[in-house]
Length: 186
Ligand SMILES: Nc1ncnc2c1ncn2[C@@H]1O[C@H](COP(=O)(O)OP(=O)(O)OP(=O)(O)O)[C@@H](O)[C@H]1O
Ligand SMILES: O=C(O)c1ccc[n+]([C@@H]2O[C@H](COP(=O)([O-])O)[C@@H](O)[C@H]2O)c1
Image 1 (spheres, protein in one colour):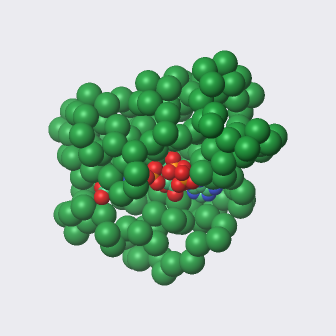
Image 2 (cartoon, helix red, strand yellow; image 1 turned 45 degrees about the vertical axis):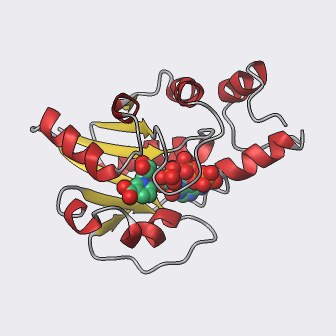
Image 3 (cartoon, protein in one colour; image 1 turned 90 degrees about the vertical axis):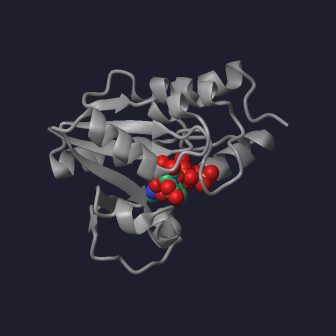
């Protein structure tokens, strides 16, 4: 079995995340993609929305989509969500599975700074997708998958919501959840 792991803060999850999960699954012929919301992102300020709200939004986004699932392994572990800890735990729990770890262009650029990256790159196959506005060299250990440019980011969506402007890139039921629960309001 082949599984793509797609970690993120998902604050909030947007259509870019959804397209990446679906496209990488199709193009690499993966059985499943598991979205893994971070408990505490390792390299940025804590998320604005609570872990529980980020999970509820992810559930709504992938609802009914074949092959897309969620793993809450980083919530169960708490603390900073270092990918090496996640990958080691998942390999132990599922020794029969071949894991891939999906990252966008901003994280390709940042990858040398990841915790214990030298050890991690021998434990999991990285899969990269480009991201508009970021430039980087592609290291040999990253397998690139072609996707169309996805002009969305959680930061710009949060900023738009705070300014009370219409935002692009949210799935309808995620946007409804945000509005019903008054997330990202000033
Ligand atoms: N538009 C995009 N194109 C390519 N990769 C993306 C895009 N948006 C997010 N990603 C990738 O998805 C993963 C999770 O991203 P994350 O949850 O941090 O969302 P984000 O939009 O990058 O958030 P923020 O704007 O707050 O940094 C990361 O690997 C990131 O590189
Ligand atoms: O382990 C690390 O050092 C590390 C550093 C930066 C990012 N990551 C992981 O990369 C994924 C995307 O991160 P983010 O912050 O862009 O949402 C998420 O699963 C993070 O845990 C991991």
